[in-house]
Length: 104
Image 1 (tube, one colour):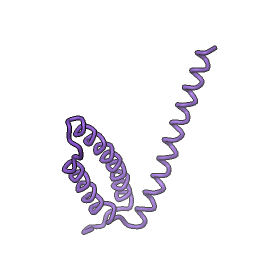
Image 2 (cartoon, rainbow, N blue to C red):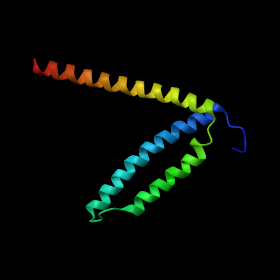
Image 3 (tube, rainbow, N blue to C red):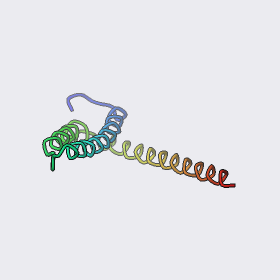
């Protein structure tokens, strides 16, 4: 990195990269499904394009992050996973309670 980038900014970039990776994976699946529906057995050019995008982002963001930023990212990522898990569990509990109330 040519200039000094704060740990917070690096951490935000890593979080954004994680979101992008998830989107890239979902987009890849959708692209493959769409291509197969149109009769293409293995849409390698579409997959290669997505892979090149991920590799470039990996080089620009992940490989250049400092250890401090990676640690901060992992802590935030774990917090985010815990938050999402709690939300899902709460939604499932509410749904089960609603079904139970409906059954009575």
